[in-house]
Length: 176
Image (tube, rainbow, N blue to C red):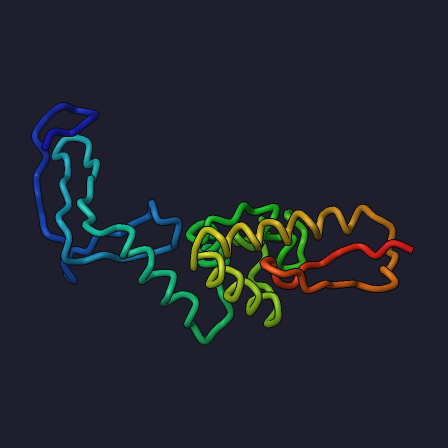
């Protein structure tokens, strides 16, 4: 393999405990990988890792992050949010914080969220990564929350549902 910068042959090594590869591209601080091939340019020291099954690696990372018994760090929250495919603004609405506050936490300017918000982060990212339908439902909820914030705070008198043959239960507006 040739270096894209210097156009010279790169040297190959196996990342090991003694000489691991620090994988910064994930967005996680100090993520260390071993057991992979890493190509290094002898001239400019550019490194190119070969990471097999990278999507599976991200799934394992997300699963382990969600299971931490401590409050999540900002880079972990950002990783989970991105892995789940949730845009920052809509994710902030879902967990009940401003986009600015989410940004401050994700970028390490604010240490952590509180326990309740931390639990919401874990729950929503788990739900969203279950599939497209779950993610779209969460994004729709975020949009509805944004619209509700703009509307007057008026509670509807009732919420009505009807059982329709061949369609099941559906919400409907009653006419007076």
